[in-house]
Image 1 (cartoon, rainbow, N blue to C red):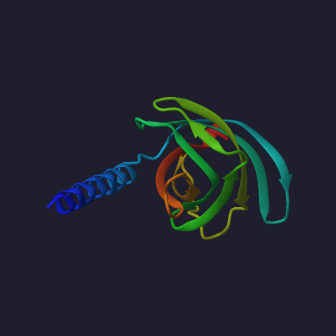
Image 2: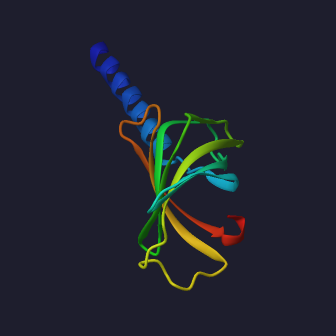
Image 3: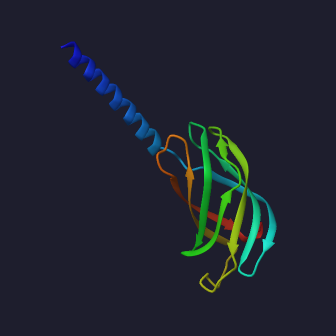
Length: 151
């Protein structure tokens, strides 16, 4: 009888821990892009422009976000426009911002892009990062509107 009670307690405790883990992982909010600054031309090749850009990111979560190996791809109207990665590991405190540098590679404008560029671009950003206590890479998808005059 006592063994059965102990096993039930262990089962309930394990179930509780697993539930908390999955609920916490499912409720991760993506960092918010506050602004882009210090855009510097690093190099220019025939079909690729390399920039160094500072991104100011805000963490809307109730916990600190830590990430490594963050990389992303930017699409405009389903056309692969650019790709990049963050040069450093990321640690954004809860409800705080962080300024972080990125190497950003832009494909030279191709004929697949819309021919009538307006004063802004709507970009789909797909990326991934390694985060602690998450078994696989965490994948994210953001939609951001960029003003052409900022670049």
